[in-house]
Amino acid sequence: MEQRRVLVIGASGDVGRGIVGAVLAKGWAAVAAGRSREHLASIFPPRDGLTLVEGSLSTEASTAALWQAATAAGGPIDAIAVSVNAPMRVARMDDWSAEDMAELFAANLLTHFNAVKILHPLLGADGVFIGIGGGTADIILPDLAPISVPMAGLRMLYRGFARERKGGPHLRELMVLSMVNGASKRDQAQPEWLTDEEVGRHVCAIIASPDQFPGPILKVRSREQVGQPEPAEGNTRS
Image (cartoon, rainbow, N blue to C red; front, side, top):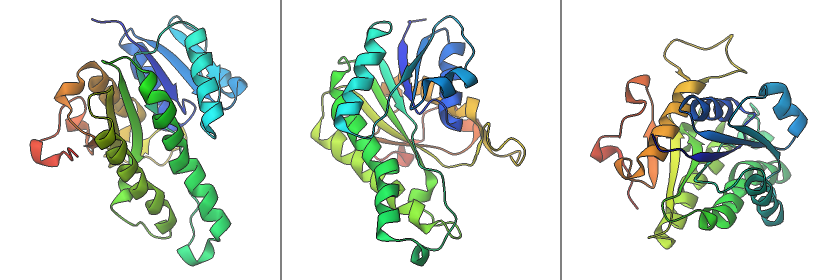
């Protein structure tokens, strides 16, 4: 098994925790990044192969600083997984202000823009960059229409960067088309929901064999699919 070092940005969130756990379970090294090192330390007990790094994707400068901290903490990064999003606010579109929408875009879309723009080119030629998105890009749930807007934009962001950067490190968006049974939702999770660990395992499968998961847009919707490539008709290749 080839050893890899994976930078997980947004590691304190439900999906981020699952990715960190799956990376460590494979015997790889994980760099768990979040805005508060103290919060990360309250989630992840010390263990071999795990490094905690404080940083954010709020600006291009802070994104570059996060990379410097991650590489200084233990060496080269082979893959990056970005799982950052704003807390969902349940409200009708008319109840949001332009300022609210700007904050939503900054948290859910511009963070990924900064990450892809600054960090993706720093990976080696065989590196893998995966951004996590949601199924609300295609559906509008009751009183969650505003969330669908940046999620749809996120898909076009990854498609656009992938088109312009052909031949560089692998670039994918993984759309999770399921509610996620993670730390914040254990008490309400339904049996059919994907677990945080299952999403993490799927991310690791993409990192291990990116050519088997041609993108740039990938989707995972059920546990039967975890670790398996999508049927050819399910991929968006450009």
